[in-house]
Structures are given as structure tokens and as C-alpha cells.
Image (cartoon, rainbow, N blue to C red; front, side, top):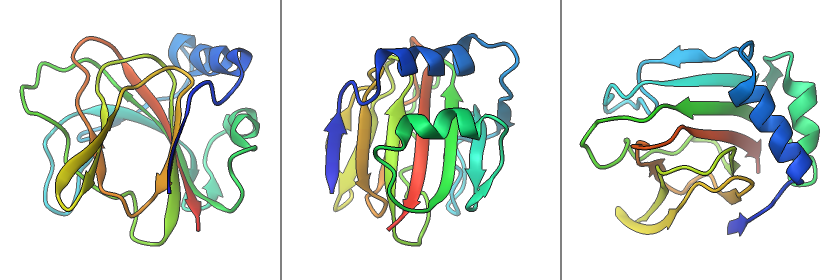
Length: 167
């Protein structure tokens, strides 16, 4: 399964998410030393995260404000629901470590808060088969067993919501 939906949520909800996560000085972001640290190591590419749900448990006071925005897409139990914020990087490396979010069967909902550089990359047989440009309001839905990653943004903030749902 692989689906791209532009303008997946209303303009009002798009603006709400921008106000909440980008323009709100009090939204709690948490530092991560590496955005895609895997068992194979890390690239030391820092980012910030906010977990609305972690291991199927609500982890944020903001969850009840954000979940209804995506309720028409989410059908099963949410395992993880997080936002990731990456600042522009001068790193010359091509892209972050390819990964899957978890081993158990799941679907991924990747929503772009803002237009940005820092394309999301999908792999098949260890080769890139698709690149998706971050575009405000765009939602990408895909099987969680697809290897994926992203280029570090060079010019703009890259902010996404990543939802992992049970299959």
C-alpha cells in the first residue's frame, strides 16, 4: 500500500498545526542526538521530537487536540504518534539512515506540516524507488515494512507528523 493525498486535512487544521507546533513558543520539543539512530549506528544528525502517543499510551496533553484531525484516516490502534522537527543542516551527506519504524506489522501516516526541502525517500531492493517532496497538507500512507528515510533540509525547517498504526 502506498498512497499520497494532497490537502489531506482542511486549511483551518493545517493552520492550527502550524500555530501549535511552529509558531507556539510553548510547544514542548525534545532534543534527539540523531533523527534516525539505528542498531547500525547513528549519523549524529540532531532533530527535535514530540510524542503524542508512545507505545500505545498517550504521552502528551496535546494529543486530544491533534488526533481528531487525522481520525478519518486512522482506523486501528495507534502505536506511536509523533512529530519531528529538523532544522536546516550544512551536512553534505546524502540522506539519513534508511529504516523502518518498528518490526511489528504497521501502517505509517506521514504528514507534512510545512513546505520544505528534505524529500522523503523510499527504497525497494536497496534502491531508491520514490522521492516525495514535503508539501504542507500532504499525507503519505504506506506499509510500515517499506524502508524509508529523508534528506536533511538545507533551506527550510522540515516538520512532519509520523503516525504508526497497527495492521
